[in-house]
Image 1 (cartoon, one colour):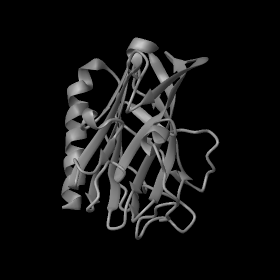
Image 2 (tube, one colour):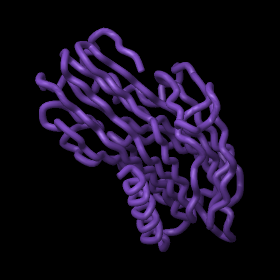
Image 3 (cartoon, one colour):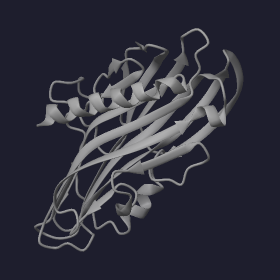
Length: 272
């Protein structure tokens, strides 16, 4: 982790900072393909592109990153990072950690299409200190693109759909963090002193934008920031679970919701 000079208006800068094409890649890790119930996840690649690569204690070798190999359940893909965090303390403390994930998602069942894609993330924030004017806090950011490559199994001119958990979003895309009143995933003193559990969710309703999509590329940045304003203050944010869920048809929505809940509960139990 590292400290820099005082960062002013950081939350406003970070909201616009996700998925910045010019950010330097620090390390890359490629994960095995996963064949789900109705879709496949292939070319799964994660690149650290902000701050220092965060490595699990017994994870990939030095120079790689970041969340560890995912586990698949049905049409869900879950990452469970152990040390993916940003931490700052003292006067003018600042730290940022981020990684970009890319994967191809292809419908594999007979007549199956990719109707909806969900991204959800979970973590904790810990803030403390005698000075609490909002200048000590943390921020989570999740933003990216879904590019439609095939419709009904036929290659098409790519359609790019942007998304942002903090919004604004185009038609067919919704996004929110666990407490929208806090803004774009921001938790700060004095209101969020102590330990806070947080979550973020993005829903891309492909069926309403490009019906019958059968192959898409998903690319998104997943960033954490921490900043501190005074001596004696500290800010820590950790991310413990990132889930990619695909709904191949409307009738499986309830099944996806149940799967997300199970994975979230598992992630929470693992940390307690």
